[in-house]
Length: 439
Ligand code: GLY
Ligand code: MN
Ligand code: MN
Figure 1 (tube, protein in one colour):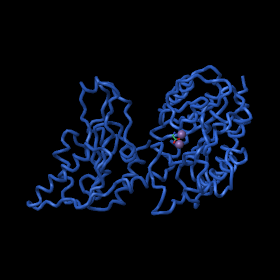
Figure 2 (figure 1 turned 180 degrees about the horizontal axis):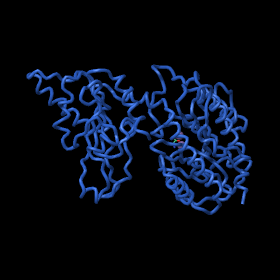
Figure 3 (figure 1 turned 180 degrees about the vertical axis):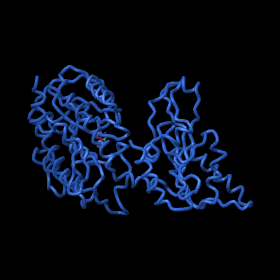
Figure 4 (figure 1 turned 60 degrees about the vertical axis):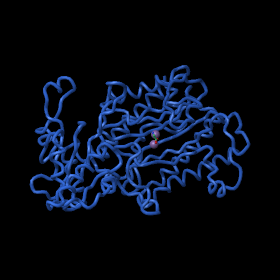
């Protein structure tokens, strides 16, 4: 991503912070997987949003209107021996020349330098409670200043939650961000198509999962979250990630998998028959979910509030379940009593961005937020009838059991409606069966 994008974001944040303020953001720590083997490093989303700096052991400091330097980056120094073992570092010069810092210092000097930067500032913008080790460090720096109060040093009087400003910025995607998300969705949709083409009874869930990994990596992407590849009743486990069962003829396969491109996520779910043809029961339930999804997507437009897509999905699902005899009673009462939750126990979507469940408030005060152009959300209704499901004391008929269905798309709110970023992945019964029937 172009450095200008990060500079623009810093500038906007600093405008909102105002004078006499400091923002402090740490890079994500390296996480150990086992003994001395590390997890793949993933930069912290907030830190990346403002810096684009990809290394651990770094701290960004923003000080609006400071004459000498408004954007200071603490980072690792160049070190030929360490770089031979562990990889390249930008170093202090790189922080300034490649990543746009006005000034850069070694991370090892932060305890000596940072308290001085807080002197005579009124407000510290910081996300307290996300990283307890770093919280203690920040408290330590402020306390150092308090100890100097008698020498006339002014201590910041206010800690302000950085997330309020930053996460609201992140909710509205720029053109560059939308381009990154479009690519993430495109690559993911291609992988879903490949999965539909290769799936055959007898294969293992992890063989299908491997196809996603392969396709992401081949296109310079990572997975945005652990893929859910659940055949049959495994599709009824919302966060199923074992992915180690054999796919059975006659079952459905639910795949919730999305790529991360340039730190922006896609989050797509498709459900299709392992053998390429939906059974009558699968078809009936699938069509309800699809109709619910289309009704929900129809509500994604500026001016509608956050909950409207969910309300639309719930209505279609409840009606559909009544028609199949799975729910009995009065439509309005069933909705009011949330009877559908036996079969549909999650909400219809979430914000999407650098984090799969992205930041941003869903309510302003007590009211649902209005959708606005530039916001991206998922629309993902589902129906899950695990073996043994009961409605009250009544067991659900055997023929419905073991069917789990979710259909999930990534939807951008536009000026006059919406744009489905993940539209390349087939989702009608006909399109799926046609694709899977091709030799
Ligand atoms: N893949 C996680 C979700 O759909 O929310
Ligand atoms: Mn989702
Ligand atoms: Mn998902």
